[in-house]
Amino acid sequence: MRRRNFIILLGAVFAWPHRVEAQGAQKVWRIGHIFPAAPSVVGHFADAFERRMVDLGYYPGRNLIVTRRFPEPIHVEDAVRELLPETDVLVTWTTVGGVAAKKLTSTIPVVFLAVGAPVDIGLVQSLNHPGGNMTGVTFEAAIETYAKRLQILTQIVPNLERVAVLRTIGDPNVTFAMKSVLQAAPALKVSLQLIDIKTADELPNAFEMMESLKAQAVLVISSAVTYGASKKIAELAFAYHLPSCSPFREEVAAGGLVSLGPDMEVMAEQGADLVNKIIKGAKPNELPVEQPSRYEMFVNVLTAKTFGLILPETFLSRADQVIE
Image 1 (cartoon, rainbow, N blue to C red):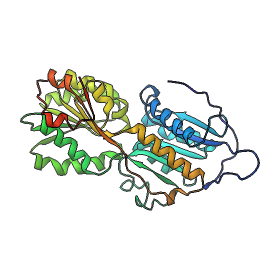
Image 2 (cartoon, helix red, strand yellow; image 1 turned 180 degrees about the vertical axis):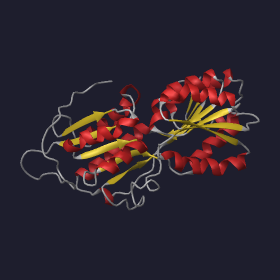
Image 3 (cartoon, rainbow, N blue to C red; image 1 turned 60 degrees about the horizontal axis):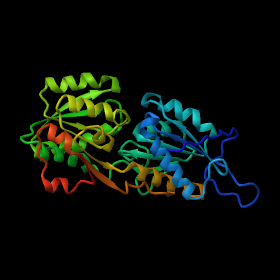
Image 4 (cartoon, rainbow, N blue to C red; image 1 turned 90 degrees about the vertical axis):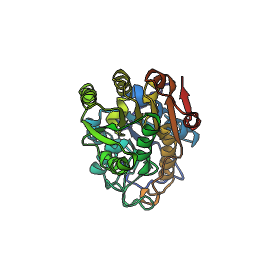
């Protein structure tokens, strides 16, 4: 994938809302782009964002400078603090990124992406009328999506009774997600085993705990930590013979069983469209928070065969991609 070198411009912070200058030299827009995961994992989303900006008429080195940061989730605030003085519009991914931006600025326009419940956690007043300096794209189209992931596991794992729920303590998305899961579990006749981690380093112990609790499957709760550790989670789930359902297709590509979640490259393009509107003069509080425009389900048939699972044809026919 082509790499671009970006020059960081130093200067005064431009207060929002901005408007394209009608005369004189063309303004160079400074975009800070923060994704709390390794660039090898999420760099293609940053690329998708920048390709869309080019489509919209913004060219690196001419009228656009994008400064990328890929901090660990626990260092997101440091990355936001570093970029704010040299940023016209800040783009942050994941719930922890949105929360950090909310804490550190009330003036710089912020476009958040892949945030689970922006109203519930106080980023915006409402989806239609955000208020303040933030808008963006939610990770889930509705709270019921987590219940749907749990239901998927009951459809493909015979006699499922015990499901481990892998969640990141301290991530604001967890409370939102658990509302859906806890509500759905009794009707699906499964008991939930709550497995909490703070960092990816705790994953091996987490799966040992699942084994000791005799879990029959694992439901992954979305967070910056679980996304960044998708490959590791898939490998551990495979090693422990645990069918998994995740929000992230990357986990299925690495050997996980099934995923249901938004297409985040498309989400990156949605983010670029919102940035363009802000550059053209719109205030974030005037731009409704959007939902993902595309959801997709990935299924790993090879993993299913290894686990001895027979996936119904009706189920496979609903998949956007089947990995064999």
